Image 1: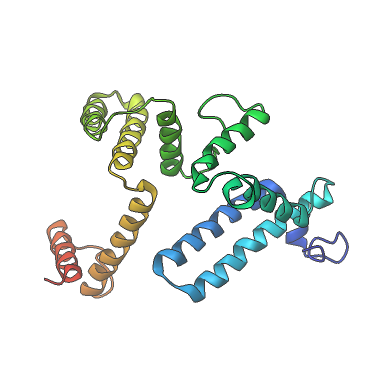
Image 2: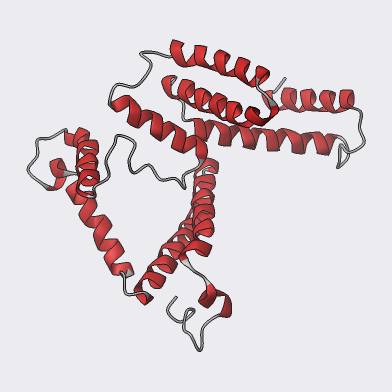
Length: 240
């Protein structure tokens, strides 16, 4: 990466990159890793982990050029953090001290002057994942429904508000509805981000099956024909 970023002999594209321009690629590579895991493709996972590691190296190299930190310091910092947050493994805390992880994280946020129960939840996270993390943080200080009944009722309430909202308010109300769905999923023990990712993949499979059954494309087909193709794809996937 140092060679690629060399001002005179390096790659023109790599030299021009900044933290801001590289960040979207970092996020994309993390999703590629998640996709390989979901597919159980360990060969692809190896490649995707390499791509993700390259992103860490890229950011670290730019930071080193700015005199901030190096890749070695990044590796040392995470190693130190793992030891610090596992005192029951690397220190003298009692066994079974995994619960200390969140306590230690809270102490670290306090040391960084990050106040409030919701401090430190990254704004760059996918929206569903960030919603779940915010809800979990709020739940730790008692701001939560006692069971799944409350968030389920909230979905009905938010649906009604979407239906009756003015055009200029509807996007906000849809956001509230999605937030409520994430809350209900959390109470049911379901990872909303993973659930939607799986739903996306299911839609892709079934849509591809529709296209195949239609001879390559469903464009121009009547809606009733498309619906029948969709139902056939569902039946085929379910084995009946």
